Length: 479
Image 1 (cartoon, rainbow, N blue to C red):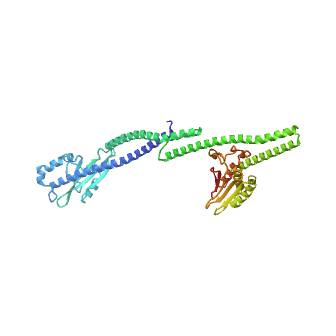
Image 2 (cartoon, rainbow, N blue to C red):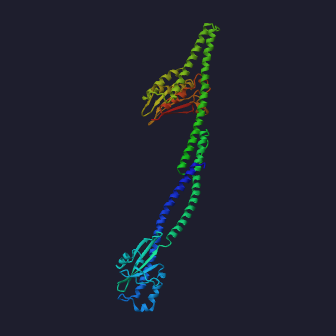
Image 3 (cartoon, rainbow, N blue to C red):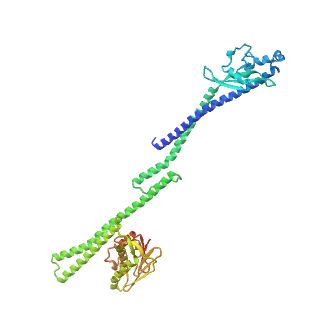
């Protein structure tokens, strides 16, 4: 059998039923045998009592046999057919074990009485009907002996009726009972075997489905499902397997997305590095070959190379920052900080940058408390990135509003009134190297907001952006 679980379950069910049948058979043998003996004992007692009651009518009040009854032939006729009436061996004896009746008109001796007759007669003459059970020497069959008193009207006992009979038919009855029981058990075993096989198949069917699903998952097919709906442990396992399938599918999609991001990152970083390197190399080759010899042009080339090297340095620095922040093993110093102090520091630096465009920075604080746990330098870097973008995209002589507010959590909002961000671009502004195509953003690396996002995550903060009448960034610290 290919399905080992089906074979095991069928075997277990059959073994349990077989053990149950053996126990039932033993109990049946004991109870059936005892019940048969008790039934025959009751029947034998009824016969003995009936005989004793009839025989008591043949005796007078003095205990002597009535002459009229003797000569009328009633007593003799009754005695003649007594064995046939009782359907077993019958003796009528007195207290000294003298046989008062012949058997088929033949004289009996005391030796023909049952072995335990003396004990029975003694007990019967006390006024009680007595039983005795023994076994025959030939087949070890159970033998019943019963003694019943022959009582006169005054209660005196003149004799004893002894009935001695084997428990006939007990072995035959037991054999027949066993035959019926064996046929019943055999039929029940066959039916149980078929039912257990069917139940086992039903039980293992969802297991086979789950096994197939697990194999498909191992082969990379993450859209497969068990589609098992059961309100039991198997159903719970199937449900968890479907959840695993969903999570593996999501993980594979995320893996593909990360791989695409990695490829895009390599392409972007290659492009970003190639531009300044190409400019620097071209300038150096021109100077080295003497193509440029005019002092003013040479100076211009030096300035260009310096500018490109600074841009290259800024790009490398941003990449290192982003790489460190995305590494969970990179620890940042988390101490008690005052957000108000950090914002004042950022605003002072921002005002120096905003002077070239005559931009006004307006700050307002209504927060109940301003203490958070974080890294001063990283928090300043995050706010500076957002403020620098706000200055970059604000029009000349514009305004930037900065607010600090909150009761339980602390929120910092930075709003500019520039052109804003197109709604279709909002989901991507925190991606690495993502830059809007505008004149204001031509010198950016596309890493600033990605770094700000990572700093916020490290400080258990959320960054949200809205683009309506300018651009609004909200940084909410969850305390």
